[in-house]
Image (cartoon, rainbow, N blue to C red):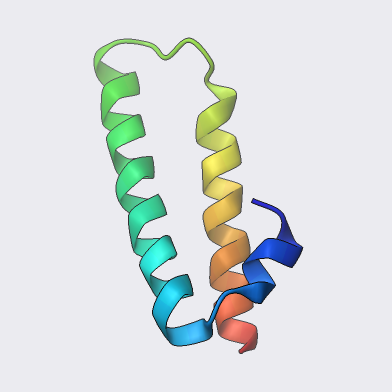
Amino acid sequence: MKIAEIRELKANGELAERIATAEAQYNQMLLNHSISPLGNTAQIKTLRRTIARMKTVLNEK
């Protein structure tokens, strides 16, 4: 998700909901990776950075 797309989301409603969803997805991905390796481990890094971007924009607002 691009930073411009993140900034268009509403601060309290949509952005907080997307952060919670992404964090749940990230935790599930880590669990799945610990059991059996993922085909593309770069997805973990990408998702972690996306969560950080969303939290940064939420903090700015």
